[in-house]
Every structure is written in structure tokens, then in C-alpha cells.
Length: 322
Length: 77
View: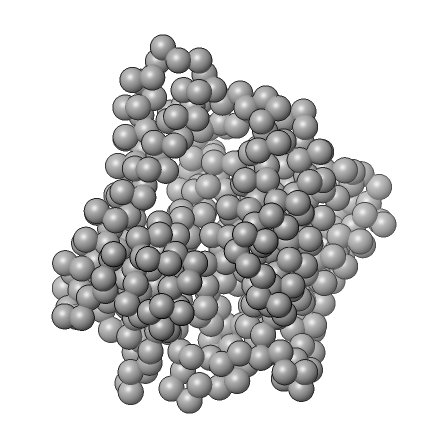
């Protein structure tokens, strides 16, 4: 691994992500790829599917890295392919609104190369339990379930300016750091590319957002966290980082239609003073809105603080283990 | 309770749910000692997921309803 090539790849990824997001924010309005920012009083029309810039930028960075750095092998390619294919599933979901079942099957299929490349990895370490010998179940079940669960959870804790890209930056950043510390070069490089791609996008996605990530952007970082965790044997860190999304998922399971609450209960409303009035079903963001009057930016900052604290826990658990 | 304290308490509660789920998993793991490692671990992990779901419902959301100043609370169905 040559540091100058890595710096070049991640630098190009970050700049490309920002530039592409900027381009898409202009072009997608003309193409009608837009959504309403329902958490603003004026309800502006905002370009959707901005996660495409993250997908393209990360792909560009990985091509540069593979072309210039001869050390990258199957594991790195498998990680990139899993994240990229999950991003493509997100594009299809943004354009055609896939059914939940189809989305799950397609994301599981996207992890096929990662399963193949991890066929000799049979165990996962958990606190208290220790090393669990999954054997052949690891590539057959653990990898696809981890990728689909993580992608779908990250897709559900979403919908506010800067929230998805902010969580992605924190969690992928921590996974990159831990991969580097534990000596997993493939995991660290995949993480670095994804991190800079999301940072470039976050500049335009932060409040007030000029572009939304869409399912393309939200599904991809969940798959990315799981893929890095599996590649670097940092599964427990990935699980800890996903706990806010897991809590949101658990809360949403309490309602009648866990994957269709917005159709049943409606959306979050905006009060005349700009504070948010939650929709009538349990969710993590609704909990923050209920306990105190909360505007969108404050909500996002507090969820990111929460993610940051879980990131500290993920680092602590991993460093104690190694 | 100030808004910041209320929001911070939510974050603290989420860690309580995680801690309680971890404790339940530990108890189950010890209880299942006669089993082989894989089924023992799988059952313990399933118990963790179940305990976390129950904790989210019975600890976290109940506390949200208690802390919330709003009278129009959502139905949990």
C-alpha cells in the first residue's frame, strides 16, 4: 500500500462526491427527481437520489486505488462490489419504489461476492459469549443477513437534513479507524473511500439541505458498515454503531405496519414556530420531538451526539477486546 | 426538566436498554451451559434481540411517554 496513492484516491473521492452532488442538485430538478422537504414551513422542492454521487465517487476512488495499488485483492473488491450493488438497489428503489421483500432479496444477492471471499472465516467474537464458531453458516447466512439487516436499519433512521450522511460519516469513520488500528488494510481503505464520499456529500446535505440522499445514500452506508465489520472482523463494533438505528427499528415494530407507518399515520408536521410535531407512531426521532420542543437542526445534532456516544462505546469495546 | 436534560435522558435510556439486554443475554448464556457452543450462542443472541425489543418497548418508550409534556401521545398498538 502506497500512502500517496491512498491520499490521491480518497481526495478524488471526496471532491468527486461534492462536485457530483452539486451537479445533481441542479440537474435532478429539471429531470423531476425531487422530493418535498416536509420539515420546513415553506416546504421547498429538493433534488432526491443524491446518494448516487456517493456511489459514483466511491466507485471512482476504488478504481484509482485498484489501478495504482497492486496490493488490493478479492476482499477489497468484494467489499466495494457489495456496497456499490446495494447502492444500485437504492437507485432502483428511488426510481421504482421496490417492495420491501424484493429489496431484501436484492441486497442479500449483492453480498454474494463478499460471502465467497469470506468463506474461510467461520467465527465471530461477541462480548460475554466469546468466539462463536458459525462455520459454513458464516458465508451462507451471517454475511447476507448482516448486510441486509444493516442496510435496511440505516434506511429507516432517516428523513432529516444531514441525518443520514452525518451518521454515515461518524460510523464509517469509526470503522475505518478501528480497521486501521487492527491492521485490516482492505477494511480501512474501503472505509476511507466511503467516509470521504459521504463527507463530500454532507456539505450539500447539511441543514438546509440542497440535495437528499434518497434510498441510494441510506442503504449504501448500512451495507458499508456491515461489510467493513465482516472484512475486518469488527462485527461487534458494527453492531454497536447500529444500535441507534436498531432502537428506531424496534420502536417502529411496535406499530401496526412497521414498514408503512407514514401511509397509516401521516408525516411529521411543522408547527408555526418551526418546531416539529411527531407523527402518531413510536420512532427514535419522534421520541426526541416528544420530550422537548425540537427544530429539525437540533434534532439532527442530538441524534448525531447519540451516534457519537455509541461510536465511543464501539471503540472502547473493540480496544478492550484486542 | 430542561429540553437538553430531557434529550440527554433519552440517550441515557437507550444505553440502559442495551445494558439490560446485555445482562439478560449473560444470564441466558450461563443458563444454557450444557448446550454445544453454536446453539448456545444462537439462543443467547436471539434472547438479546428479544430483550432489546422488550426494553425498547417497556423501558424506553414508556419513559418517553412519561417525560413527554404533550398530551397527545401516540398509540403503541
